[in-house]
Image (cartoon, one colour):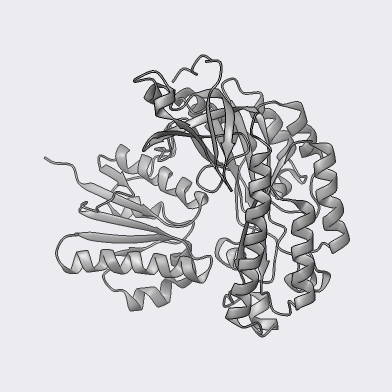
Amino acid sequence: MKRQTIDILTMGCSKNLVDSERLMSQLRHAGYTVAHDPEVTRGSICVVNTCGFIGDAKEESINMILQQGQRKADGDLQRLYVMGCLAERYKAELQAEIPEVDGWYGKFDWPRLLTDLGHAWDDALTPGRVLTTPSHYAYIKISEGCDRRCSYCAIPLITGRHRSRPMEEILDEVRQLVAQGVREFNVIAQELTYYGLDLYRRRAIAELIDRMADIEGVQWIRLHYAYPADFPWELLSVINRHPNVCRYLDIALQHIADPVLTAMRRHITREETYAFVERIRQEVPGLHLRTTLMVGHPGESEEAFEQLMAFTRWARFERMGAFAYSEEEGTYSAQAFSDDIPDEVKQTRLSRLMRLQQRISAEVQAAKVGQTLTTVFDRIEGEYLVGRTEFDSPEVDPEVLVPVSSLPEGEASSLIGTFQPVLITEADDFDLFGRLSIQSEPIPA
């Protein structure tokens, strides 16, 4: 009897991706053939794991549900299930609007999907995930939820309070993944500096990363989604102490002008933010900061925006993303403020900020020409072997491109998943170009 095929389509962030990978492991164990984000959905069952963060993400998720609902109406799909953030927040409304969906599951009750398919969830299943990333790297989710209440953010409304995973559970997962051949671990949480407060009554992120770095086989650890207020400074000592903890920190700063920071409920001032960035630069030389900035929050004056531009010039973030404020129902800012800045003004400010960052990025990348940087190779794309340095997170950051033609014939594919020294010979605004330096031994799979 042919096994049923289930397509899982993941929208949004890497935290959702981890949930999809856990579900895939259970479904395969139950006897299904599972495909993740296939170019063409052909399975008899489809699961859409949705994002509900901002307007564009919600629209993308809804369009995907409607597309699969049409497949079901056309007779090409037997069952359609929806899980994740959008379903958590808008389940009642969506059930009424999209009757083609057979089951709705939120951010945390999605294991019930397996039960509804007639199977039991196996807590003892090891490994507990089917990796959808290249086999040499994985995301490690250390907590759920967020206790911060930033004015513009709907995530706490979706995910609830911060909940840390037990430290031993996380470390066991890392060991399991190392045994599978994973060498690079991207640690993710909505707010990783809160890790441990609920379980251990203290900020335990530094201890967690310290212990993770001691696990044999862990080549790189990269930290994502920190918060500047009440930052645990002992974490910087861990970065300095362990060569396998990347000199990289993803920490959203959002703005610099005091009136905007107050309106955003960020619990930090302009002066404290400048001091924060300066201290990080001093304590971890060479660390690359990735940040996110927002333009157009209600009340952002021209003067406030110019302060943000000046701050960006001063800070010279190695990695930076930005977005324009969009009002999210239920958030503090939607209730307390009028969305008083015209869209065209928001977009003009966003464009100016990103043009500035493009110039900064080009200078940062150009400074690497002539350096030899350890690079992990992810794939072959066209004429290039494509990889990343310790300063580059998957999907969102610049890449290193080595011409396949510069390598012995047939060697490029054998380098995927290995960490190699690359001499940087050229840079554009974002990406680096180089050639393999002295050949090192590939890391065994």
